[in-house]
Length: 545
Image (cartoon, rainbow, N blue to C red; front, top):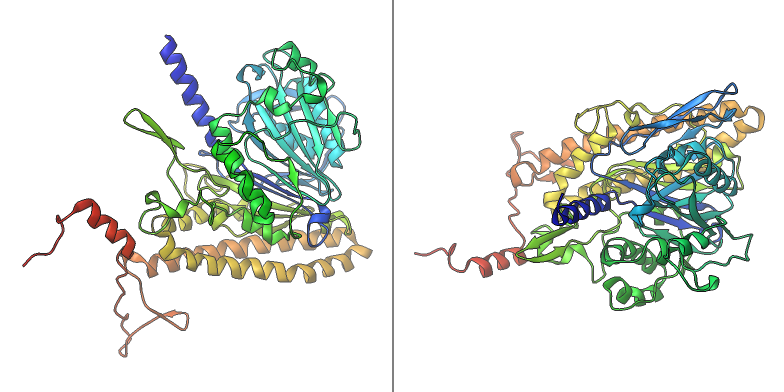
């Protein structure tokens, strides 16, 4: 292969890798309105079929082996020894409320260990089955990659329990070299943080053992590879192992900036960093101007830079109906010049998303709620899944269709069906979705105290009964969301069929005095769009006598 083809292949790989782009938002327990630690995640990848995974608790005989298949592709990587005892895991939360999420930053390509057995997805779900707390999870993850090798590229993990939230940046050491270099920093309880496909840990306090952990060779390995040659106190993990480039700023760090500025106006000043006119990186964490609720994080996951200079609804690419979405890929060429689309927190290629709520003042079975949704965070309904759940709702189950097999029984496909009706006529149709979405999420929020009070009373005398109650509530909630969204889709296709809008009265489609459908409304295109059409076409469509 000649040099030009090699370069093209690498650029293509890098571009594809950027589509595997996720976002984590983080809230410390003293920064939340109810003392919860809160973590959000969107699993963003073209080709991903969204479902709710479940790993039941179990006990295993010594010598039992566990097959490892890469989470992204299903490729068999090898076997590891199974733990003697494992814990119940539903989604990305286990029965002790421990939650782990991730975003991929890639980093230096030569550090991927193609001979390793543990990929980042397997690392998450194996750890959730083996660890009680965030600190124990970090130690477990380190032990697993040291023993079996780390197969993936650079990864940022969010690791949270009801009391603490940590960000852990990890990258391998290259083919055939077991282990990984990593650093983990605890987010202060009164702060918020985020990461979005770019390593965010720069300098860290190596003497603060209570709030910082790291691999023993995290700096020496960087020296050995000639990634760093300064004094230890100046070492930056991000600079050494994931040097910042244009895409890291604009496609990744921009999402963090947008979240920060929502809750601390002072973060507006980092716009220059996002746009490349300033070199000062954003802090790893900040103090918010107010305490955040779980609903605040759900809403933040729906962001498209609205109200900022990066607002996706404010340029020609938004089309006549002000869509905040752009078709992939992120970059494109016109002539010899390359251009790009913004990459916001909310994106159409999400497989599933969640907002994890963890509370230390309640029994684990009640305190841990995975507010779970399929497809695009902007157009989903975050529905409660309690961490004690040991039965996956049918509509969330793996096997109900797949990425290329539609199923009317799959929440993934129902939410995609509704979203894809709305994308082309966003401003015209989004209010109908938003009304139903708000009604459902508000209903779940208002019911939460009563549901948990009932469960708590049961838990005092019969924990198993309380867990069964919350499992049933989880399944009923998921099914209710599924049925409601299916009805929403039916409503939308009737109301907006063929580009017209059917008239409504008192919540029903209007009929005339003899029972026939009322005349339709023809909204046409918005005035500002028509003005642009005339500018572009001149007199071509001018009506003449």
